[in-house]
Image 1: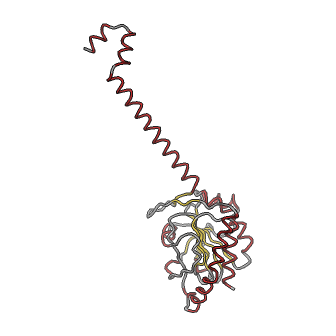
Image 2: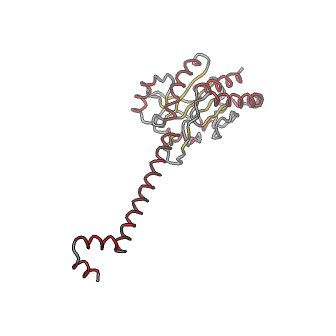
Image 3: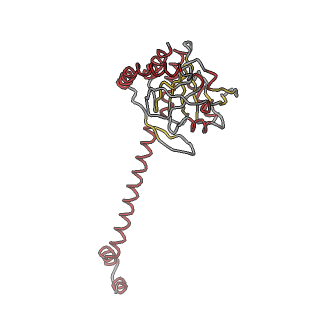
Length: 261
């Protein structure tokens, strides 16, 4: 029947027929629906990609993938951190004294905990590590025993890491003659690191080699940046997941140095 109608109609009637035909309408509606779904899915994917790029980065490890957001670079955040540190300072000092009396200087530390735990944690030497610096010399964590160590896990491809590095360089210049040592452990390739270190004038050891993934795993690092502060005995006295501001870093170092006195 449809064929006969089309055959007898002129061009105008053919167009009207196609326009009013239910089969044609259904096909056109299906195309519009699929196009709408495509635009919705594309919009969601683009939004997620933008949020991932804006809020943090992912550690490229085989055992886990987790994203971490950046910290707000405001004095308010720094003040909140300072208040938290002050409230726990007496407890920390008592814990450190107790640990030193029981011989905690024979081990180094690992802490998986949450951001700004500010609590003491001690483990065995199995979590110490030895990695290559860019000068091909081996560097071990226990080489800096007796110093306050700021240990930063990071990568050049991580936006929050890149943002905090200039502050780390500046703060290290302030404390390098005060028995404080910064160490960076990078999940990166050597060529990218060389260019980045030259651009940002990084003035403390950056370690990376084929075992860096295992070091990340030993220390429970599944997102970066992640910063620890270890006292002279290798005990963690500060732990922050996420980007640190300059004032947060200074406050953490000052509080940690006070505990050494």
